[in-house]
Image (cartoon, rainbow, N blue to C red; front, side, top):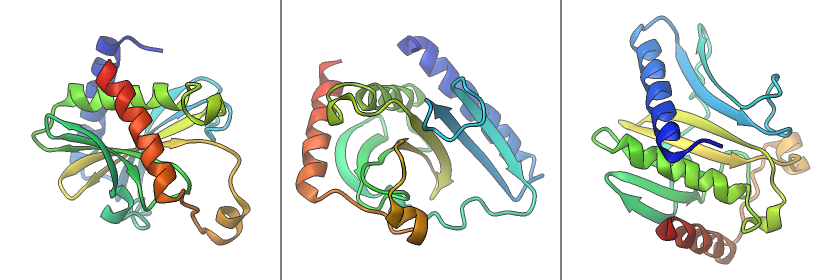
Length: 184
């Protein structure tokens, strides 16, 4: 929805606000996420970022650096984009990782390109209309997990078993997204 320049400004601003709240040392965890679309799980109908401070709960308790490992798509300016081999919820999740000296503009661009891809006909024939962005501060990197949203699998709902596409499918998706990003 935003121009590239507007998106870069928004991502930079949101990351600064998030970091400011973390630096207050007032909360056990500070979560940053964005909802978009009718299946994103948000309580508000319009797309929006939220920064939430948790007093007693560790929002990172069930998250590990392994959840951000995946099939590499592109890498530039100390920012990497991959498809998760260890998704939190299942099937396809994209990870954008930025080291401390990474370029925020590249980070924002990879997020925007991936979101456009998810909402396009190139990704599962246009089946998706919703996604979430989840941000994490892990291993001195800022991680953004981009989750296309769909009705959850009974395996996940009942047993928290994440299903993963086979490697061939992951490679096909990675190639399609890489082609799109390199063409921009």
